[in-house]
Amino acid sequence: VTVITPILTSCYMSQGGSALMAVEGLTSLLNETNFFLPDATYEVTSMNGPDESSFRLTLLDLSIQVVCDVATSSARETYFRSCVDFVSDAVRLAGGRLNDRT
Image 1: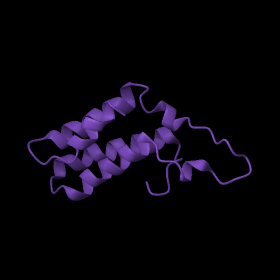
Image 2 (image 1 turned 30 degrees about the horizontal axis):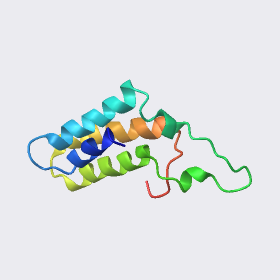
Image 3 (image 1 turned 90 degrees about the vertical axis):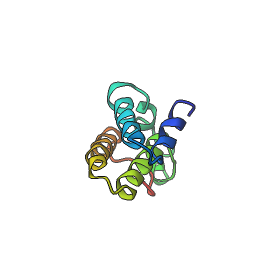
Image 4 (image 1 turned 180 degrees about the vertical axis):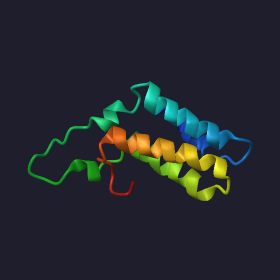
């Protein structure tokens, strides 16, 4: 959590290109490290209940939500492609098992 907090906070900064750099940093964390792997390989503990991935909120879920905020709240077209790339890679990594709110 300590590592990702400043990155997610930077996504909401409108000065300079900090939001774009933050999204690109998240993409690097996603594709070049194992940072989000525990979120993507979460095992369902209850075999009788509904899929728990719809109830839990992971750092990957939160990161997707923040990047979507960047894409929808920014008027800059230069941000959009990086946001789409991150979200598509994240959904692929998670196998589509994300929180319902994500």
